[in-house]
Image (tube, rainbow, N blue to C red; front, side, top):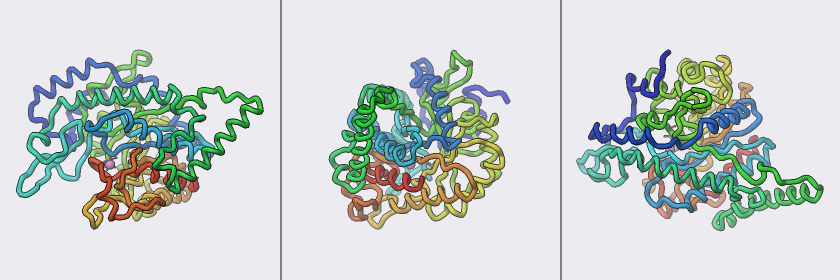
Length: 442
Ligand code: PEP
Ligand code: CO
């Protein structure tokens, strides 16, 4: 079937903003299409190879970052702190499981949000819902909520400078394994998870010292540098189309807005615009899979997105809810296994576990998160497939957005540091604790 970067326009695209001025949007699309790509196609191919290892059970995928990145208060410390907790989680997973962790951030492009309702009504005033900083702004006013295409350019620019710093940190010494202790932020170090991490960092230090004493050089790039990839939900298709380029080496199309992109639970219709766009780009792609997905739908998605049955091409991100996973997941695992698609299965234990606390805050319970991951592992063991990865929303800060964890956040704490623009995220200690709990399951 013929495909072009704009062939999605003939299909229904859900969850799109109603852009008020078509000309302004078109002007921005033209500008974006002349700007340099954010990633190189060869890097996306490398990630596909790493994910192929995950699909065979030879590596574990850790995909983590913000629910929605913000234009406000954008600074280096936030990027560093998010990277740091992801590196810590990766070390915990690798050390305990003995397989490498493939690190993918929800970062440098995660600016657009699907919403349960297109509009929000407060005191009789109806305005468009907040769709992420790539589209509009959070305050409930007419000007803030009006979709503004200039925001697509700001998203591109912020993605470029985020990616630049991530490359500098991961290749320039920050991610050196000799620095495992330094990644433990002060506020994390005093928590139970932080202390457990400190012990593990000590063991890694000792192993590195032993290697050096025994004359085994630890002077490998794997010790001094980390490979870190970017990803986001490719929701706003005009933006993704404008950054889609033909790779000069292979002649294939790549969406150069990120290494990996995924389709959300609300936009994965088989006859929809998002599936149409995704089927033509050669990046590794993901698709969220919720509890209402049928075996026929999931095999249809696999056929559309991975017609060549290519390992590493497709990651299915299960987000069932802790109370649904045992019931809903096994038959989907069986259907995909029997279809012969070599997918990566990752567990998003966040999006099926959101509820409103008595305090009025949207939150998640850490124990529900752990319970969903445990259910995910059990389902894979039953069916004989690989539990390939973890997909979580977190921040490197000391926020109080999810309740539970061993440095307990109570419902009454939620108001203290509730900073997310969209969904509640794990804080740094909760992220590290989750890595330890997952490592025990591995
Ligand atoms: C998300 O990952 O932020 C999200 C909206 O997830 P889902 O599409 O699974 O609801
Ligand atoms: Co979210």
